[in-house]
Amino acid sequence: MCAADEEEERRREESGANLHPECFVCAAHRPNGLGIRFRAGADGSIRATFERGRLFQGYRGMVHGGVISAILDGAMTHCLFARGKGGVTARLIVRFLRPVGAGRPAEVRAWLKDYSPPLYVLESELSQDGKVAARATAKFIDLEEVEPVLRDGREIPESG
Image (cartoon, rainbow, N blue to C red; front, top):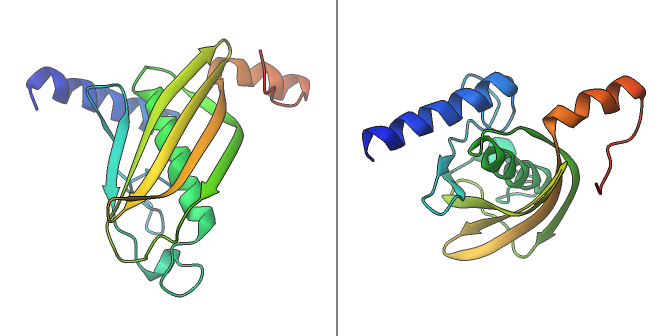
């Protein structure tokens, strides 16, 4: 990794840490969090390799589906951070294809599919042993649009 890439990676990590410092998925200091470290790919995608043990099991030997969903969602959030943006999940659809084994390495990646202000559409996949185990599609609302929604007591929109 060249110095410019390292600087960009540091900037992206600081952006994420500043926007959600207590994140269950990526905050390194949380003792019971996942502490996943995402890296930007040359193609604009985000990737991370991780391994989680029994603490995050649902059924014996399998990572809990809610944890898998959180990882997929977190990867998509970091895809926005890599673009200097923040976003809140408005819709998340997860398709579980096969169990994810606890205590074994897995990889997650995410990429931007579409942007129609104020909504981003992203996709992510979680793989283990070279096979896709879960995939997700999500709509995120630009973080700048969330404060008025909260202030006015409205619902987060799914379309522009």
